Length: 427
Ligand code: HSE
Image (cartoon, rainbow, N blue to C red; front, side):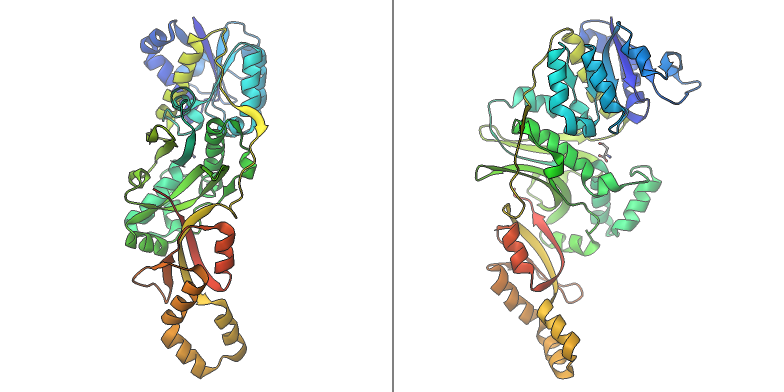
C-alpha cells in the first residue's frame, strides 16, 4: 500500500484526489502497489464531499503517521507550504508538488533534503501544468546542450492576448471578461505582470543550465502595456504577440527573461492560443522539440502531480538524482542581449520640446506636413537599417530593427517619443 496525503484541497488538490480515486486501478498498477489517499489537509470543512472522511486540519497528524509515504503539496504560496515540504522530506516522505514559487526558490535545497533522506522531491506540475516537460528535460534530453527554451508558460495571459488578437479588444476589457469567467484571478498581478512565468522559466533554466537561476535576477515585463494598435502592426508582420519565458545561451552567456514578444507565423509557438501553454526547446543535437498542452486546470495539473506520485511509489526508499547544482548562475544583462524590435514612434523629443518653447505656427505646419519623412530620416539615422511598416495609426511610424543589444536600443531610442517597443522572437 502506498499512502498519500494531499496538502490543500483547492483546484489542484481536489483534482489529485479525483485522479487517484477515479483511475485507482490504473494508477496502482503503474505504481506497482495500491495507491490510496489517506489524508487531505485543509483548514476548511467540505461537508458532503468525498474527501470529507479523510479530512484533517493538523499537519502533524500526517507528519507523525509512519504509514504516509508520499505528500502532495498543492497549497500554493510560500508558507507554510515550504515548511511542510521540508518537514516531510526530513521524515523520509517523498514530496510531489505543483507549487512553482517553492520550487523556484528552494528547488536545490529540497532536492538535497530528499537525497539525504532517501526519498524524492518531484515537481512536474510546477511548469506547464499538465504538460510533461520537467521529466523529459531531466531524463530524455540529456545528450544535448540546450541552446534555448522559449515558452508560453501562463494560460491566463495567453487567453487575454489571444482574445485581443482575435477580437481587437483592449487589454482592460479582456481582463475583466477573463475575471468574470473565472479564467483570471481577482488579483491578476502575478499573471499579467509576468511573475508566474518568471518562476517557471527560472525552474526550467536551473534544470537546463544545471545551476541555480534566481528568479529575482530575471528581467520580467508583463502584458499590461500591449494595445490593440500593437496587434494591428503585428498583423502586418503576419505575426502575433505572446508572453514568452525565454532562456538562452548567447555567446557563451545564459540570458533569461519574461516579456511580450512578436511571434511570427512560422514559429511553432504562433499557433498556441487561449489557455494552452507550450515549451519549445532547442537542443544542439536534437534540434527543436515542442511540448504543448493544458498549462492549468484541475485535472490536467493533477494528472502531472499523480504521475509524480506514481514515480515516488515506484522508487520507495530510493532517491532518484536530479541535477540542479547549488552554484548561482550569473545571468547576462538585457542590456547586452541581442534581439530585433518592433517599434512605434509618434514624435521626436527635440521637436516636441521646441514646440513647447516656441509654438511657432509656420514651423508647426511644415513639421506636420513632413512629419513622416522627418521621422523616417531620423529613425534610419539612429537605428540603422530598418524595415518600415506600411499603414499608420494616429501619425505614428512603425518599424522593425535589426538585431541590437538592449543598451544600443535604449541609446537609439532616446531622441524619440516611443509609443511601444516589442521584442521579436527568433524562429
Ligand atoms: N495562473 C497560472 C496560469 C496557473 O494562468 O497559467 C498555472 O500555473
